[in-house]
Image (tube, rainbow, N blue to C red):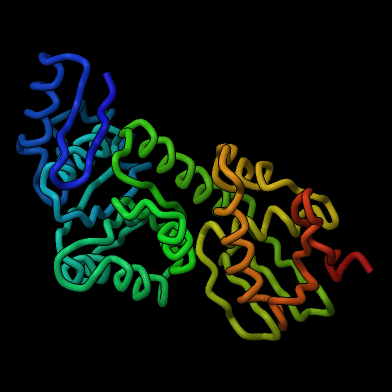
Length: 287
């Protein structure tokens, strides 16, 4: 059985009444406490294993039914879940707790989701997944430009949400493993520290999102290798983009604005029309 979650005014659907009732009970049971971690729901050994590798996820969603369904599925995956239905409260939770990933609806009470994303991105590279009924292409592009790592439109399938979170989780783990190298390019003008996940341009720290850092890392580790949009999507997101590649284009555009002296005439990440992108500089140490 798979759930399809609709926006406000919609409904939840399943392929079996018995399973539907079971899931509804799960969504409204004591598991909906905030935050969620119940040691008595598993053996101590299983709980310790889950806790060790658990992410702390904040869901910001003012539709209680949608929030409960998301919450129940994420808890079932072994993650610790916090919830909020209002922008200011969400920012306060991010300040008070160690949040590893933010799932953000845009049309929420208080300050809008776009402003929450802007404030979070101003001080953190925390992965952000926007889940919203704003389904126009311009909305997706605007969301990514604000700093979102992924953008999911309603209605959405829960299996897809879980898969995208897993993809982000894999990226976060990859960034934390074997990342003690510092690479410099263009006579030190561009510097990437894989241990601290920081990028410096002319000695000044620039704030890249998790997705942007991973995308830049993929490109610069193989100088002059031409990557198609689909190849980059697979390397960075964990799945191949079956669309027109606009999501990758948007991320590249944002990276250029942060690392290039003139983002309209880039020297680091260049485009080969009809083929893809490549990073043109070799590390300084190779010369």
